[in-house]
Amino acid sequence: MKTPDYIHFTDTPAETLQKVLTDLAPDKVAYLVDENTQKHCLPLLGLPEDSLVIAIKSGEKHKTLDTCQHIWEQLTTAGFSRKSLLVNLGGGVIGDMGGFTAATYKRGIRFVNIPTTLLAAVDANIGGKLGIDFMGFKNHIGVFQDPDAVIVSDIFLKTLPARELRSGFAEVIKHGLIYDQKYYEQTSASDFPDLDWNDVIRQSIAIKGAVVAEDPREGGLRKILNFGHTLGHGIETWYLNASKSLLHGEAIAIGMILEAYLSYKTGKLSLQEVNAISDYLTGIYGTNELPPLDEVMKLMGQDKKNVGSEIRFSLLERIGACLYDVTVSAEWIRESYKFYENLK
Ligand SMILES: NC(=O)c1ccc[n+]([C@@H]2O[C@H](COP(=O)([O-])OP(=O)(O)OC[C@H]3O[C@@H](n4cnc5c(N)ncnc54)[C@H](O)[C@@H]3O)[C@@H](O)[C@H]2O)c1
Ligand SMILES: [Zn+2]
Image (cartoon, rainbow, N blue to C red):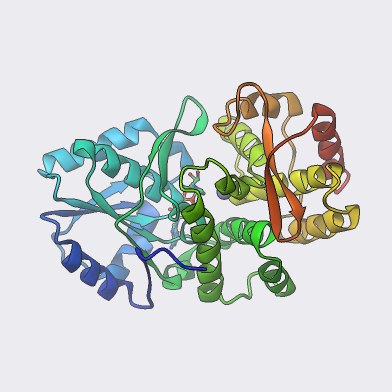
């Protein structure tokens, strides 16, 4: 598997960033951070005092048009031209929103992502999907565009709260389940969080990179990355709208259990395999309250992956392989809910 060539793995991100900036030769550079990455990650870049830092409030609830406006204003005030560049230093929120503001400012300026969460390193920063939430719907407004560089280092994970690390790990589990049985077996054999994160990040990026390279615009194969995300996104959105706390990966962990069960209903996975997957996931994530199913179904109706009114799923064909565009009955979804509720 070939890793996209704009990705730089490094133990010395400050040096790598300087090399990348020398190559890209922008006329101006700004650094987008939130309060946590400003405190914990920005000092690791060893920047001059007078660097232009745009700081926003952390969290998904700030991944909005209002925050974009604030960023565009800062870029405008600083006299950013089409030769300028934005460095997004943070998790998936900073990467998605910073990329979106860069890709739309003056019809697009260059940007570099430096992921500081596991989720951003293995998933959000790879594959060119940029965007913001709108009217209560996740990633509702956005564009596709690859960053000019992604600088990846596990050094940033040292200050990441354990709950955030665990959240990002859900995507790692997903990568094994949908694409690479050996990787799944290898990661699930170790006790989380005692893993070699450098190695995990490389393997996950290679998997996501390979899938995206084959199908950048999600016409087909890329949809397998949505395993666990159809119901998972609905659940995440419900929690977000209810101002209750559930991280992306925590929602996806629930979604993967529900959708593993749906994979069993389609005759692909055995019930034994579903039980093994759900034992592994609940061992790490516990169980959470499920939102009312009719509300999740309504939210799923807005899913960008839908065609017309039909809701389509990406379901496991076996451990290490995934099918996409599978339609399932509402009855099976109800059953999957019951399966999850009985895990408690
Ligand atoms: N574009 C894509 O393909 C894609 C894929 C998956 C997820 N996403 C998006 O990613 C977002 C979630 O990303 P996330 O989980 O990284 O969330 P996040 O960006 O909100 O970061 C999580 C928290 O960790 C803090 N933080 C970040 N790095 C830190 C560090 N090194 N030390 C201490 N604290 C740190 C942040 O300030 C924040 O409070 C969602 O908006 C989701 O939609 C996008
Ligand atoms: Zn995800």
